[in-house]
Length: 598
Image (cartoon, rainbow, N blue to C red; front, top):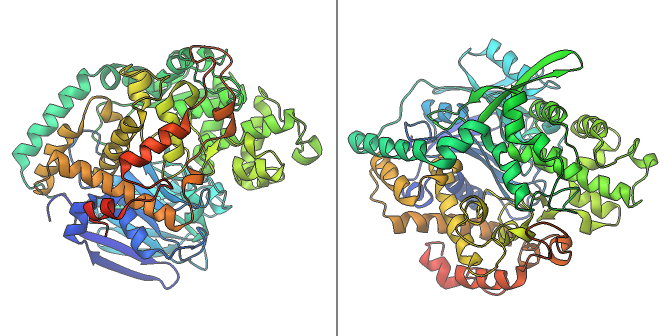
């Protein structure tokens, strides 16, 4: 095969069995790779109703056919499983250097089954694969784990690991690779911990076969020029990183503050990308083959000691900052470092703490239950509760379940800012109708990177963010295209400058498959519908394509979006119709036949 490696590595931790399977060429063409291909395997193999933390759940680490090539920013992979946070399909995305190493070792994906009786890690050195004891690493953070495993394996090994949050089965634990890159959302780290799998270390020395090298090179150079000349990819992200959005989103009145009670944060400038660049930035950091370099290497002086790490990114700054009423950038950066070490999703962490703070303010929570006051703006309580959550210690054991279960436990479910039990990211949809529909319909729960309409509604100012008209089709276009981007193995940030017709020649030249723009976008639609079928099979439906009541009933009180709520129901009906689904959100038989889903 060209583009694809043609081999799947399957490891059963219960039996210790290690097998290699030939990749089915037709399935690869239809589902592309990474998110799409892994979702297909999960759908086909996982029995309906499987508990996400049961050994029977699959955990799939999958790269795309462009991952590890010279394609611009083709450094991504997806971790696909059934989510312990939502009960829906999870496909958590990460970059860095580890994704390419899986391919250089000769594999398109690694499938983990079963559960080891004791802590282990997987050592993959090309075709030599071994299951090794991880007793020495269990209880360690991700940084120390990586160092210990390299001592036992290879200095050049690239490593995926979980921290204490994954070991403790925190429902929003992520997996961390390359020390500070994370597949952070939907609790994939808890699934890894439930299998007693501490890490996967990979060393690959092979290459990737490209069908048409000359055409591939030309496409790469063309895309590179577009990336470098783009306002976002060539200027904004390299200069300020993703945190460039703090002031932008705040100026539109949609930076969620104090658990989405407001859309403007008075401390935004203090936690902005501009302030980070001026006060904490050491240098930029890029993933493999990426000219953007949006990563931030930062340094803080914490209690007399210099600490250095990567981040925080925009979503983290918001979740640990504005969402909780905190404007101390150094504190946010410290907690960000801890999230990398513990393997915690900072979006769900910050949103869950913001929910707890509102519960406390309303009297639904007391100091007797929490062990300390939980007040908006109190950075020390945020710091302490981060540690307690990762360790499931005291009230942290309740926070470790996420905000939906927290709010339900204390009789105020409406205070959880979630869809399908996954917390929203840093955009108030009352001032961006398309992203509201995106939160509601996202197959993995509240999420922006499954259909980033913010690019058109706010950043590109191509459409009016306050109107619901036309947003259903806009979102569908974003969702299907994003499926393609995730599945080929490229970074979503490239889409600020590149479109489907820029990715098409790369994929054709790499694989030799005669994709067209239509067939490639249909593959994205096929993947989206397959994920929907998975969720329907697990009991999710229209009732779950909803938003927190606050967003539907409480208008924003100030700012450019003052007086607005999300007009969800009308958009949802149109969305279903345009998708070819019935009124309950079920794909029609005609739609399934057209997509080859039977």
